[in-house]
Image (cartoon, rainbow over all chains, first blue to last red; front, side, top):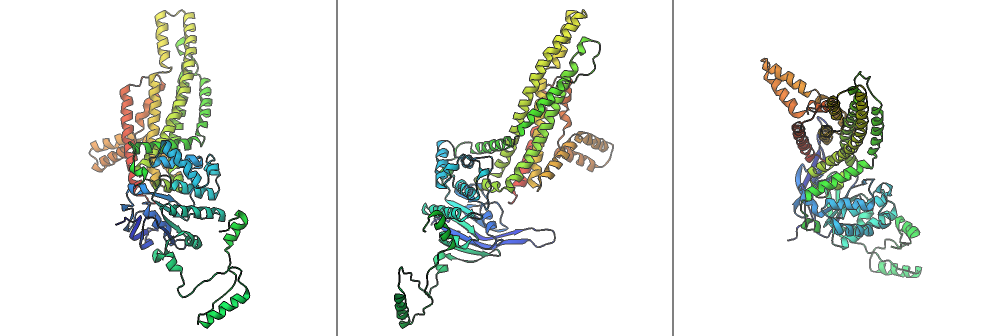
Length: 283
Length: 308
């Protein structure tokens, strides 16, 4: 039986606010299981408990009740972090270090060294597209570059699980697209990704499964295609269809008793338009 | 299992602490703290100009300058090492929390004790290097000045017709005021005092939410430390006089928790030319070790349960 990459069981986390007040329950009985190789998105509004769930998984906060495990190891134990990389929301790294020095620092913390680390740093800088900025101090990096170096440090010890907290927060559409592509690349490499975001379109593009968290409770969970499909509707997209052809298809549909809901030009997203105009990206 | 996890290098924890310590050292160096050495050089030059009014005899010529160089230099070293030990330690932890770099470090397989020890050792490495540089400057200046003083004293004594044995005795006394192993021991004592204060600041910064609070309370502890022994003696005497047992317990608790900085007063004696026995320095090191372990373990106890 495969050991889940992430296993959160009945997680409850309460924070003390001030004297005489009831503790604030940030996470309320959340259970999530993520299998190796999955890209899982946890979505919810600000303050819904996404980040607290992630912090509990990383051992940064201790559960009030319940448990968290990474590849079967209790999250409160240090060795559970052997196989995990983490990118926090809006990360700031040591400004006095260059991009390459930053990765070397994190690599050494994980026990890497010598040629292995040297090669790994070069490989990661290439992966996140920061080769040209490798010797620039991180203090001078743009927001998107910070997120990418953050992603690179999360991957430095070749973890089997990557946890990303709002990975594209505050990043422009181009940077956001690059980060999404990187997440998809990780998925292709078989790395499990646990991503939390309140940007729904982004989650929809990359995740296999999603969970919706609201006021600390997991209110819905499942495969993305199952959750988003409208079972009683069918979409047909045609290229260069004449008005006569459309009218004929509509008549045919009505003859067979199908409801004709709409026909018109499909819209691209504003983001895709922006990327096409600025990057020549036709995706 | 990842490659990193599967092939754990030997002494990984020590290496990891070393990585964090080197990083903290670099971080502080790039904050340009070594500019303080220029200030030290100015103070050293100024101390060269200070000489007390001379007595009639040749033996007193220049002796004041030598004491002045030692006194100003060791005083500046104490000030610098204590201020740096406290502020740097108080700054590093909250900064990592504020910038969320702590999340990325603790999300790696880094035990919290290793993180704390690394940060503290980084600060202490900086204090050590700074003191070594200041010590080199002081010793160099003192060596040059002692040579000149000896020359002046000898000329004056010979002019006054002193016998050779008395001149030799005078030279021995003057040399005792110059660079010596005791003086190096005094610099080591300055470092040990900074070690204790940095460990105090580390403990405070693990539960404090403000750098300013940590710095102020650390200096308060430093101040109390100079009176700890007096307070302890007073409480013990009260206990002997038949007063409450609680006074003894209180005194014992104060002695256990607050560092006793009066034992570092050996530095003043060295400035006056006294010899610092190796046993006294070893005792200082042992006491420092006790406080260091006490404060670091207490810091770990607090930090291990801390949530981010």
